[in-house]
Length: 322
Image (cartoon, rainbow, N blue to C red):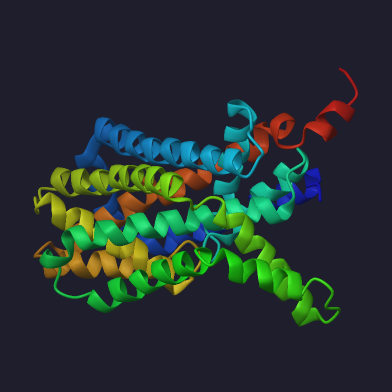
């Protein structure tokens, strides 16, 4: 599969429309408060928040490189970074599934879809582990959300236990190999996918990727804490980390596009419970999401626009010289 210029432009247009819709809804009832929040944060504060988001993306990219190498497909840093960023253009899809767009570009470089999907699933599971750990950090300071954390723990332990059953997965893949039914073929491909993902979850690699994940998501949680501080609200650091992580977890479990709506409701609700004014809580949430989620989307769109040589080297080589 190759994205034609028309498909690429249509994709970018749909992303732009989604961003404008989100911004319009977010600002509809409090655009003055959001603009006031930006003014109080200032360009310096915004630069710090964006910088901490870049720390998040950089560390997660390092983790991605570790997964690709473990799957037997090490990639040069430059092209791999462009492919990784391009996946961010579809972050606002349910469960971030659109980030599997990376598999299209990796296919041009010889990586089968099964293995690129295994890398994607491993990345999502690693993110979920980190978010749950950060939720636990602030759990004692939050009024509720225990059931969300419990669901998150189950969502982490279930796949990890499944991935630990290598003999079971191998037996299932072998038994379903010759099945001609759709269910049988689907089961065979799923078993192969999980066996590939299992290679990314050896104890040593799991420890390293979990540490990277916790640090990377802590960077964005710290940005959220700083936004609250700049808006004259100073909760304990553990509370800020817990609120941010719980909001991200709620958004992920909702399977709404990019967690849109679910994350915001949880974040605003917890800030209101802690005593922050409604206008300030809404403004802090919108500013944080713009500096994290939507900043990633912008970088992804830029990668799609200007990184075609890295994203599709075969098509780039076929272009006539100018």
